[in-house]
Image 1 (cartoon, rainbow, N blue to C red):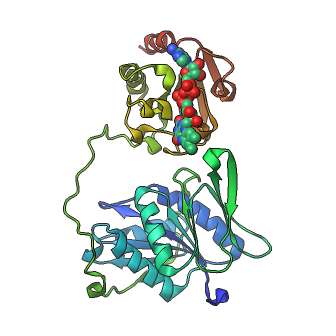
Image 2 (image 1 turned 120 degrees about the horizontal axis):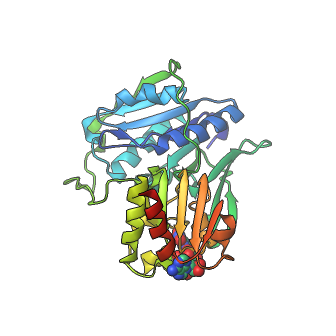
Image 3 (image 1 turned 45 degrees about the horizontal axis):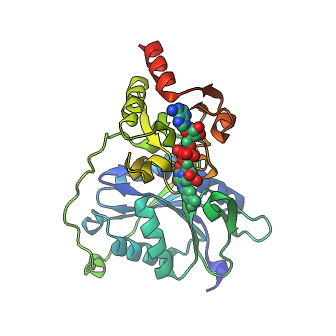
Length: 331
Ligand SMILES: Cc1cc2nc3c(=O)[nH]c(=O)nc-3n(C[C@H](O)[C@H](O)[C@H](O)COP(=O)(O)OP(=O)(O)OC[C@H]3O[C@@H](n4cnc5c(N)ncnc54)[C@H](O)[C@@H]3O)c2cc1C
């Protein structure tokens, strides 16, 4: 592998069911920074069916160039088909760095693509940068249960791949009228049939419809909530404020609330304007997922917990007294 042949920073512009994933705009921020530091182009890759319309939007948010593979065979996501198309694109265009969102789809896709390409992948990074001396990608991620941050490099192969956690970067601002190149790549669909997996049906999960990682207000409960019923009180407060409910790992492990509500190192990363932590002690693994909140309010009986110390507003008391009082005041 001649490393000098590899140029430009790529991001994977994930689409699903006719929508561009919001985390793509965060990748555009991170990718733009890398491309500028290297003096190279930022390119986005769009795979799917009837996705071409997103290309100009990606350019308006910072991409210099968009590769589009728009064919019916890519309408529904299948790991091996998408990974084979991506690895063929990599072989053809030789990108230098390649960022993929660490979504459920992106985690599977990045790993498979890296294997097909024969390169290294840093999974679930929270920060990326270019090393000034050698131009390598430095990808940083929490390790050892969040107690250490590890910076990982991939010295000998290209592209240096990385899956980047949603909410790790601000979304790129829109710059209407930005000019870029849209390259429609012909896809030999016959080549990508014969997948071991088959798409049967899409079933939307029965949720409350509110995406936690997009919520501007989150009322999160910890072990201090005490039981499953207690989350109803948090739901009331969240509904009153127009927010979403979240949780620490304690209640998830206890079966009081589903895992998809878990915030933290092994859950979701969130960046709301307001985070109300109810009965959460604030261990490092939880803080890893919410410390980017603009305003943190903590409700806890114990004033010495890390969450009470980190909070902008620390309310010492029993959450079963404080939350009803808040609801009353908001009435
Ligand atoms: C590898 C690894 C990954 C992990 N990933 C995650 C993760 O993604 N997310 C996560 O959250 N954790 C994670 N954890 C677990 C983490 O270390 C903590 O155990 C967990 O966050 C504790 O949850 P908690 O704060 O709800 O519970 P506790 O630490 O038990 O805190 C409960 C708090 O409630 C307060 N309280 C009790 N009753 C009341 C009341 N009535 N009113 C007000 N306050 C009250 C107490 O004073 C206490 O501060 C991980 C751990 C490991 C090792």
